[in-house]
Amino acid sequence: MNLGSKNKVDASFNMASMTDLIFLLLVFFMLTSSFVTPSGLPVSLPSSAASSIEVQKVSVTVTKSLDYFVDDKRVTKAMLEGELKSKLGGPNGSVVLHIDKDVPWEHGVYVAGIATSLEAKVVVATKPK
Image 1 (cartoon, one colour):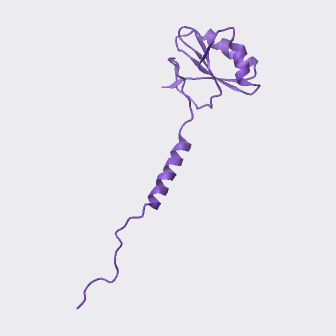
Image 2 (cartoon, rainbow, N blue to C red):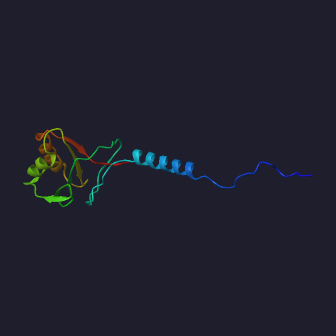
């Protein structure tokens, strides 16, 4: 009497569906991650209750020692307008202002005034509460 099963079970594992799943997860996380480029300069940003993510075109940083940086390049206060004009390249640009929380806001208003005269949008960078 032959009691053995005629249907043999294949013990191998197919990895194709697992790699497809991992690839889809990788694409999902890449697309949903934030595209914020942090400033490499030591600035203590003020906090804000409401914040949004802005695609950064030109970054202007004012440090505690009142040093001005445009995209991590140190500039003087007199050179700031020319540097912004060359970086923006025309109207409808965007300037993200990273200003230390201990700096008087007259310096931030000065940078915002230059950006507004160049017809650029000004966004103040803050850290969430």
